[in-house]
Image 1 (cartoon, rainbow, N blue to C red):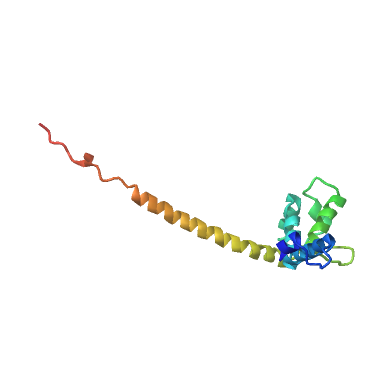
Image 2 (image 1 turned 45 degrees about the horizontal axis):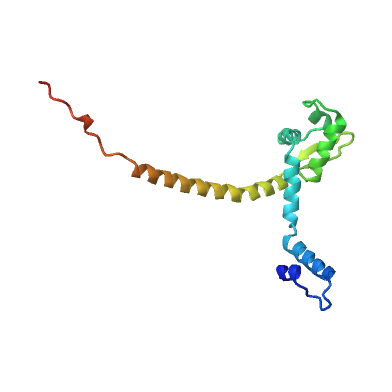
Length: 157
């Protein structure tokens, strides 16, 4: 149907605008990203930066304030806050409020979602590597040379 809408006309009047509208609508319905993919995109985008990965690594040991998170980095507090906002938007961390202290803590749900998504590809590659290993063993078995007669002892004259 996409090809027909793109190359021919479904509109009795034959308007090109109708063809384009139908084609784009079908394309948007067919290739619209799912909500899970949108969350995955946010997660992987947030994880793409080494500073944010380091912040998550620190938060894996427990909650910390912005000052504590900023200490190991050679950057300003506003720059660290921007990284925290990216992590918060991706729902990888949560910011709390306890009196004057605003602790940040890691949220594992989005990381699990990303891990589950990657797991299917890990299984795929493990199966591929297993098949490759079997194939290599077959090749090695076929190439084994016949035992050489060099192991016989010579008689001394």
